[in-house]
Image (cartoon, rainbow, N blue to C red; front, side, top):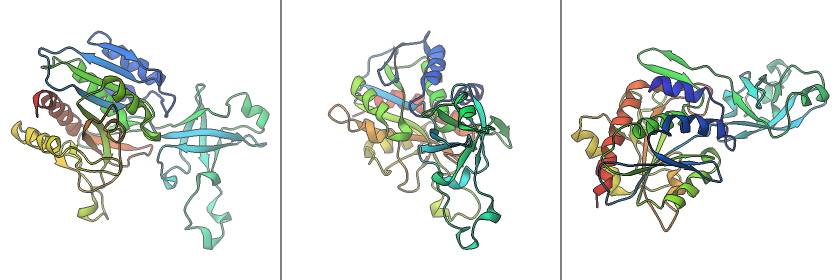
Length: 340
């Protein structure tokens, strides 16, 4: 599983540019299921199980990652850009990036602090005040390498460290994609649908069209979610904890989750000796916000892996949580298929 996640994270796929990720996923699932690719680039798979379910269940994970898009090339050969997805500008200064299909190396540059007025040094950083330095001396030189509209990706290697921890860009949500791939490669009790969707980080458009296509009774968003279990954060603000298993949501800023299915997830985890935890607060959002409004309404579920430093070049997961998420989803596939 970890090796698969590493391989998926190495592929660049900022929102709207997910086709390479899709191709890698298809290579992994093509011998285990039927699949189609939608006009928006979603990969929708149908895995035949041993039995026909009462409910049509869809498991979803998104393929895109946060990043940037080139908006302008200056006369000096620097790149102006906009963020794609929710990125805290404080974490990007000085970070290495790669630009476009040519993977042009660059650095997110900013004005040196000693040139900033003292009364403005604590002001929030704006993306509009930053540039990408790709080592060019003129616009003409830069235009030979990159173009306006090129996606820009964090250049962040995959690292294993500590007690089963992993660090990489794009763990949100390539880890979820890996879990779904492993489910498709497994023997399933019931016929099940899966979607690997585009554009989650900019509004969940891919998931909306996937849910409309499948028309499920139950849609399960497989995600990562912010874990603030770090120093200096009050216990009631930590949201979730690494090492305590998948996170089950009751509400976020985009969805009020089905109460019955929420409790079934926690009860199923307990009955099978699988670690799981409720999400402690109403924060964020995911593809469930799009899927539950599709095709006349869909019962939503949110299952996430706790992730430190989300939407940064250094997302962190723990291997035990990934395994527990797979184990729980395999059980939930059976429970949700026949539940009321």
